Every structure is written in structure tokens, then in C-alpha cells.
Image (cartoon, rainbow, N blue to C red):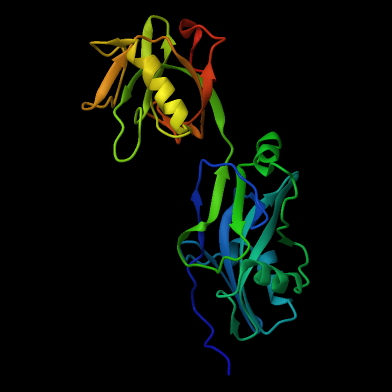
Length: 292
């Protein structure tokens, strides 16, 4: 008995993480910067739908034709369409998952089993199979090669129609030296401090760049709090600041330089998704400016 072929399946989405890790229970894939497409093939009829369910057949006729030629009666593929470097007008559909195959919903199977099913399909250009990365630190290769990042996927994960913690995206990060101008109190079970309030110098201004609340272990939290308590002052040292915390904030003389990783600068001049990399002892605070 076969299931009823679905009109639509919500694509699984990855959750952004600041962590960097590897392990045998994970596979890593290049994070593609394209258009997410779910492809539905039933007999010779093919529908390409975007993440928000808009028809895309007209935009990708070569992809539609290639999927129609697959030697299966019905299949649902998940992938991403991109342009082909150096070939204007050419596109590729990078297939990384299969959700349905010949009358069978396979979303409840582990990722490894779905990939094995996908490997049985003879994908021909412009269809391309997304392969797992073998680099010991795939996120470093991603940034060196100018990719957007990598996706980590649990091998035992079933396909979920939501943003899932079993797929994690690690985006390439920028780094920036910043100066600590304050900190917030810890909350819940945290010790030492909640977040660092950091900034940089622009001529005579000390500009607030945001809060850094991740990248600490317990020892560093306690060590930093002890150092910052010795630098405490009564008023904020920031001379240009939008969005400074109004409560549970402590101000310090700008004397500690930190190295921070982050995704990008926001339009308001704040760090997006910052995390602490470490303390810099080789840099004078007054030399810290916004890098471009």
C-alpha cells in the first residue's frame, strides 16, 4: 500500500550555532548561498517550489527537465539552486536530501539511510549531489575558500519540518579587537558577569559596539570579573552609544582588549552574534579601531 503523494512538505531548516566541533555522529556540508527548492516529481510532472511555496519551474527549466528524466515514478528532493561560477545563465541544483521515493515517505529514516537512498539516484547535470566534507575543521576551509559557512547534520536525525537543533549552521566569522567599557551582572546560574560591553575608538570617541555574552568558561568569567572590578568607574566611558543597558550595568576604565568573532556588523553598527575568542595583552586600547 502506497501513501498519498503530498502537495507540499515544509523544508527542514538549520539552527545557527556559535560552537565549533566535530564528531563521528555528525556530517558536514558546504552551506550554499542560493535558492532553496523542494522538487516534487510524479510520473513526468515536476513541480519546483521555493521555501515560501512559490512555483519556480519557469526560473529553472533545465532543472525541471533533468528531474523529469530520473528513472523513478515519484520522488521529492530537497536542495539549493545556485549559479555556476564562470558560466553566466547556467544553474545547478545541489541535492542534499530525499524526502519521498517511489510511494514511500522516507522522512522518518535517519539521515544516513536517506543519503544512501539518494546515492541510488543517477543525478545528471544540472543536478549535483552534495557530498560530505572530510576536512578536520570544515568551518576553517569554508572561510578560507570564501564560502558562507558549513552545515552540521546529525547522522541519526530524521527529517523535521521545522528549524531543528539536529541541523546546525556555522557561518564564517569576522574577527575584531575591541575594548571592554563595562559589563552586566550574571543571571540565573551564571557566575562572574553576564556580558561584556565593548567598543572601539574613532578619533576621540569611544563607540559602543554591543554585548558579548558567549565564549566564556567559568574560570574566565571569574578572572575577568576580578580584573574588571579593579577598573570600575562611576559613569559610562562610551561617548557614542545606542542601546546601552540601563540596569545591572557596571562601567570600567577602557583598559582590557579582547578578540571577538562575529558574523557581521548590523546597520546600527553593532556586532551580530559575537563570541569571545580571548584576551589580548599585546595591544593598547587606544589603538583599537573598527576594522574594515
